[in-house]
Image (cartoon, rainbow, N blue to C red; front, side, top):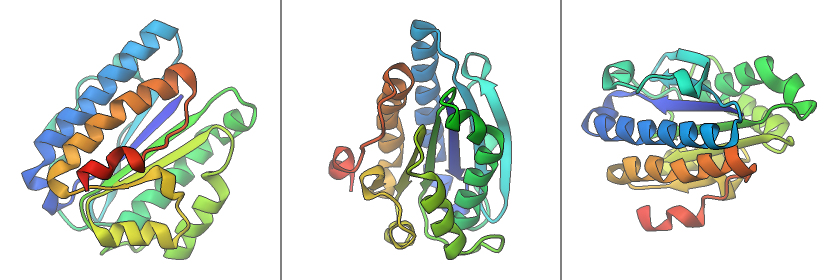
Length: 205
């Protein structure tokens, strides 16, 4: 399984990034445990974004990934949500589409933001719609979105994002949402269970 986390590091994250990073490390712990229990390979990619999109690491075995540090995603800048989402999906497809079509690999992508789109310049809403239409319903692909801003939710809805895989949460509950995804990721790696998170997050919105 290829797990790709696309994580907002814009300036508004400054008050909650430490807690969110702690929750991300819990995700990695859950995946490590599942990998050891099942002998399945899990490769992890971390993409951070503000008005720039940067890959912190790519396709690293979860057993070898060190804990994420807040300095790795130090908050700054604005929110290129569309750019980050589309380029991350496209980059993942370049690396693993052939393997997923052959059913020798699967993809789990989680996009998290606490703000709305305000600075994308590389991709458009039509590009987002096209990427979702192409990839989110492919066998072996599972793309989830957690947003702490109503406009971000609307951006994804307008592009046709599967609403069963979207969650709106209050910003102060961001770390709880990311922590809650730990069990979903573990079950995905261990049992190939697809994300179904909409109802699971209603108490956090």
